[in-house]
Amino acid sequence: MAVQAAKTAAELILSDSDKQKSVNYKGRTDLVTHTDKKSEQMICTVINESFPDHGILAEESVPHLPNANYQWIIDPLDGTTNFVHNYPSFAVSIGVHYKKSPVVGCVIEISSNNIFTAIKKEGAFCNNNPITVSSEKDLQKSLLVTGFGYKHGDKWKANMNLFKSFTDITQGVRRLGAASVDLCHVACGIVDGFWEFDLHPWDTAAGILILLEAGGIITQMDGKGYDIFQNQILASNGQIHGAMLKNIKPIIDSLNH
Image (cartoon, rainbow, N blue to C red; front, side, top):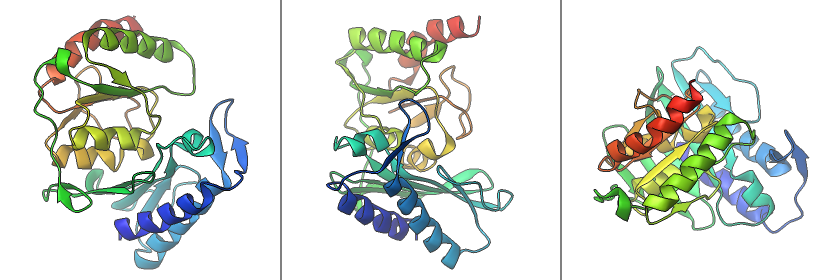
């Protein structure tokens, strides 16, 4: 059902991608379009028709049945700014959590039509083919990805320092602008690690299960346990996780003092 809902929304977004965009602003650089809202409405309609007793947490609307055991956590258009500019990195992300634990994840990377899926304890897939994280053990040979929040405060400055640091010691750092896609790229092994501040639950609710089922590791940036209500994340193939934590620690420590 998550895949069906995501496909329906992805078709809408793709059909709107070449049209004139109707853009509003949640912040100076935080965009929302009519397509975001239409996509969310379509997904919620599919969920409500099939699972009326399930909760929904979605980016563009108020929570529905927030105390239900099953929660559908939705980003109807992850990478809205990219979508507005026709930059090919945006997605639909739908995660299903049962008692706060991820059990289903689906991310459709729309420009490439890659459909990433996972069910708890059943592995991770891209277009129905099994995927696994990379086997890279050397941070210096790794390729990383990150993202920057809309608020340009202390965390934004800290992340800029991390961007500089990791760019210096790895084979590069990419910045695509859609966290759900970033997590899936780690899951399928085309990048080796991902970190970001200022996240929301819908940014990672689907991608974390896909990455975990692909053999990856996810923590907070200080190494503590992660859940989707933490606003920062460190995700990797597991092999370079310790080295990433070691390099991140001084900057995290500076934020806490």
